[in-house]
Every structure is written in structure tokens, then in C-alpha cells.
Length: 408
Length: 133
Image (cartoon, rainbow over all chains, first blue to last red; front, top):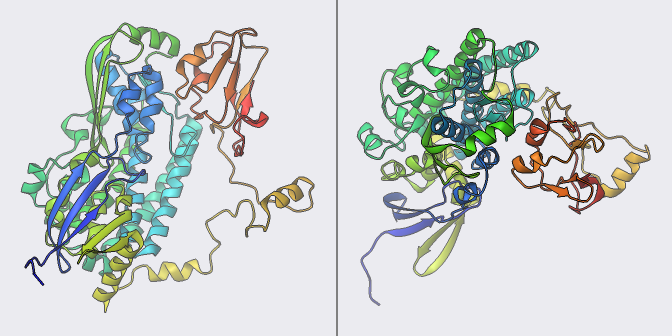
């Protein structure tokens, strides 16, 4: 019997799951419990949304863009609208700019609370999952009250927003913001002071500042590694130029930057408080006036048909910078439309984060960049030519067991 | 503190559940029988959470007002609206509708509006309930 002398195993994760925005395949090389090498393959499923967009007029694309992602269902159509406004030189009314900020920050609050719950679930702390989602539910109620829907908000319009916030709506917004404030404080205590969280998240999945810069990470992932990078401040859009806020890096709270999972939790929790503050500032400073540049949609479509040129729209989505490029050539439909979602940039930083970690740490490290975690649905370990199926449940179980081991 | 969640979990035991038990607290043995009983007022149903004023539910169509300008066909993102040339009226397939209310916004005579009705699940997408004309 011949021996190969190889002591490592390979675990492929992925490649496809319908719920994942950017389908991805990982090939882990495992030595015992430790990850020694990670390989990432991208581009398995192509939905052809951009292609479909070149067969629709810009108003129809708004609703198509809304369905790129369920959680970022505001920032995709809004970036597209920014790109079209850039191309057609449409001046957005000032009130619409403030309303856009309010909706963007509400989305950020909901996305970050949802993420905090998912992260807790990944390490087997399901009670926190229910608490955070209860907080998020209030946010969803407020979004439904303001826009009409919970998820696909349908609030975007090229040159403004579709629905105004009237005087009688402000008390309900303020009441919900108070609820958020009280609960974010509680969440911060529950998550940041908990021994279990500290054991699992500190010094786990470290992304150094250098790696984060080299691999072009964006959003909270980059900021948790100490990079002062935020589209809202670097290139202000909407009304962000008038508002008072600053970059959030973990040293705001702890005084030092580690770039680990714990720092990513800190950044996201602090950003929830920041978003609440931004909405309050907007409510105070919002001027009166029109909410859309061209209220007659038929006329707007007629005008867009005459436009030729290209433009970009960037904005800070909850997960990082989202980027839309559009080229109009004087037809009904755009000639070209390109979308770059933030998860795409935050995939490659997984490699340095995962190296040297254990299999049980894959769920929490991977979810710390806020991707769709459903890609771990199907993991196969190939060992001595016999195949062991390791599905999401078992992987989750491994994670829970590690939490228990650390507690005892 | 070692277990920060513990006080909240204990408090939850005496609190009312957050979830609205729609349509009933426990699943009935036969949903169709249960719904038939509700219609005959033999039993009751827990009402769903109330929808806000701006909620976008089933489309309502004022056939008399419609002039057949076809602007709504132009903006519908899911091509749920079909034009009937002989009558110069429209037909909306709710199974395709995304409830964005863009057709409401563009309509020059305001013949379309959104209602509060949202319980539209069905097995036949061409059934009478799911076609507005």
C-alpha cells in the first residue's frame, strides 16, 4: 500500500445557491481543524439582470434594480437613479435629497440589526437573534408606514423620491427612533460585554489594514480594519455634505484597531447609532419644497429618451460602496448598465481572514463581512476516497460545540 | 457579566409573545374546512396586523374613467398589464404584478388605485380574483 504523505484535506464550499447575490465557491485545504489554504472562485451564476436592463426603460429598471438584493433594496435603485441623473444632468430638489438620506439610513439600521442577529446565530447564540430581529421589526414597520412596503420599498424615482414625509408622520418616526436608541444601548451591552461573544470573536478572522487596502475591501469591513473610508464622507451625495458625522472605526470605542470579527461588530453597532443621529439631523434641517424634479413621469421618460452620454452612481450601502454605471444612447432602454455590489469587494478579504482559523470559525468569519451565508449549504469533505457530507446544519452544530467548549 | 442575555430571557417568559398568531394560534387539521367555517361564521380568525394608509395592495381599476392611453403599459416593470384594443381598456394580471403602483402614478385620469387588500394567494394564476379588468 502506497502512501502519498499528504496530511491535508480539501473542503469545497459552494458554488451556487439561489439566495446568494454573488455565487462563490471556496476550496479549503484543511490540516486537522486548521485552514491552511483557501481558494475562491467567482461567477458561477449569472442572472443577466444587466442584460434584462438593456431591454427596459429607466423607470422599469428601478424596480428591476430593487430586486438585485432583498436587504439592499433601496441602494441599488437609488444608485441607478444617481447614475441616470448624472448622465442626464437632472438637478434633484433639496427636500428630496434629505428624504433620500432618511430612507438610506433606515435601510442601514435594518440591515445592521439583521446582521447582528445572523452573526449571533452563527455562533449559536439564538436568543440574541430573536432580540435583534424584534428591533428590526420596528424598523420594518416604520419603513412600511413611510413607503408602503416592508422590503421592496418602491420609493425611488429618477430626480427625487416618490412619497413625501408629511408633518403627521414625524411623531411616529421620532417614537421609533427613541425605541431604537433604547434598544441599541441594550444590544451593545448584550453583544459587546458578553463573555461568549468575546471568546468567539476577538482575534478571530483578523484582516490587517494592509490586507484590507490591498484587497480593496469596502464598507464596515474596511472601517473595522482601521481604514477611514466612507463614500458618504469622501464624495458626499444626497444631503450628506450638510450633515455632521464622522468615519466610524473601532478605535472610537476601544482606542485600538484589531481588524477582527469583534471590531466588525463594534463598527456596525456604532453605525446604527450614527444612522439614528443622521435621521434626526435630517428631520430638523429638512427644507420645504418639491420632492421630485419632474413630477410628470411620461414627460420624464420622453426627456430621458433624448439623452446621450454615460454616468456613474455611487453610494454607501449598508455593506459598503455600491457602484452603478449607465450609458444612454438616445433610445428607450440604456445601451449599457453595470452593477458592482459591495460583497464582491469583500469576498477576497475572506482569504487572509480565514487562514489559520478552524473549520468551526468559518461561519462567523464569513458572515462578519455580511454576505449571504447560504453558500455553506453544501460542504463536502473528501477523505480516503469516501465522501462525507457536511451540510449547513452540521457546520452550525460544530460552531455551537466550539462555543460550549470555550465556555467551560 | 457572564450571561448578558439571561435577565431578558427570564423576563420574556411572563411577557406576551411578539408574534401575531394569524390566522389561528395552532394550525387547523384542514385549512380549507377551517376557512369554510370562518366564512359561515362558525369559528373566528385572528385578524392580520393592520396595514398602514400608504400600503400598496390589490389594484383597483375604474373602467369607466379609463381612456385607453396605454401609458401604464409603458412603465409596468413586470408587463402585468395587457391592452385590449377592441374595447380600448386594460387587463391586469395580479399574478405578475409587483405592487409598485407606478401605473397609478403615471395614469393621467387617475383610474387606477391601490387598495388595502393583500391576501391574494391562490392556486390558479388566471382565476377571476387575480385578474383585474
